[in-house]
Length: 216
Image (cartoon, rainbow, N blue to C red):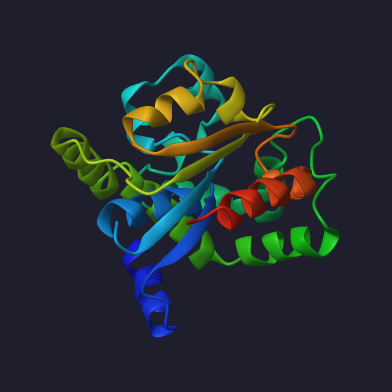
C-alpha cells in the first residue's frame, strides 16, 4: 500500500510530498517513510503507536480494548463468517469505541461505513490487512529495528487523550515513538477519542495546518 501511494503521487507529478495518516493509514505512512525517505518530507501520524511495539509489549489492557487485532488475524474464513453474519451490528459496535458512541459521525458517513461493510470482499480485505500486519509487516519492522532504521523526516504525533492510544500505553505514545522516529517536532494529545477528525475537527485541523505550514 505504501508503494502504491508513492507511485500515485509520482503519476500526479509529486516526487516529494507531505503526508498525514490516521489509524491503518498511519501505519501505511510509517512504512512509506521508512522505504521512501527521500519522498516523504513531513509526516503527521494520528492516533497510533507502532505495530512492532504493540506486538512486542502485549498487556491485558491493550489486548482487551483492541481485541480485534487478534480476532481479525485468525485463519480464513472464521472471522469473515462471524463478522458477516450481522455486518451492520458489528461495524457499528466496533466504531462506537468511546462513551460518545456514534454521536459524532455524520449520518451519511455512517451509512457509507455500513454499506461498504456489507460487502464480504470488504470484510475479507480488512482481515487480510490485519493478517499482513502480524506477518510480513512485522517481519519488515523487525528487520528495520535491528538495522536501526527510523523515520528521518519531521514527524507530528497526534492522538486522542481519551482513546485507546492515550489510555492503554505506559509510557505514552510520544515516548514510545522515540525508538521509531528520529525527528519528532510535535506531540499532542487532543481532547477526543480515536476519531480525531470527527471528534475534534477544529483542534486536528489547526495542528495539521501549523505543522505543514512551518515546513522549510
